[in-house]
Image (cartoon, rainbow over all chains, first blue to last red; front, side, top):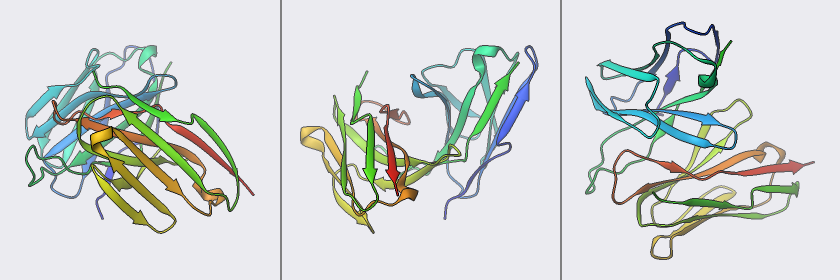
Length: 117
Length: 110
């Protein structure tokens, strides 16, 4: 079974702190993603990565950066945490597919509930 | 961008009842998945179903891509089925960008 593991289930940080959210997958997937989930706004894509050191902005990248130094690990960085970044963060991964366009099934981690005070 | 609408938004069932959840999308897609979000927030994969019909135990799903909708059937519901069900689509004109519906919140009462 695919396993996507996020380093923390719950996290409380202070405004202005630099925050790292870590995600590790064990299936050698090339594609990895970070989403945030907010009541009334649903799940929104922050960043994704399609290979080591490669990244693409999603729909809401402002205030975030990412790092992918190893294939299995994708980190989300909040350079200076703010209260409006209090949210549920979900990491996902998937392999490239053999079909045209490479569309395959995505698998999610257990989520990290971040509170910025 | 693509619109993904799920209905109903809320559903209350008695244990043992059957239900159908619907996902409509506004553009052609190359990927569609159904998830169940458990009370702890994790998204559990139910079906990867860009087209056709699949069954897994008491759950089944059908996607009619040409008519831009997907259905999730839950039969003989159990209290453990409670939670939020999400449909996520990946439009044909993009890659690595999933768009989620707002979910159906299911409450199965004993």
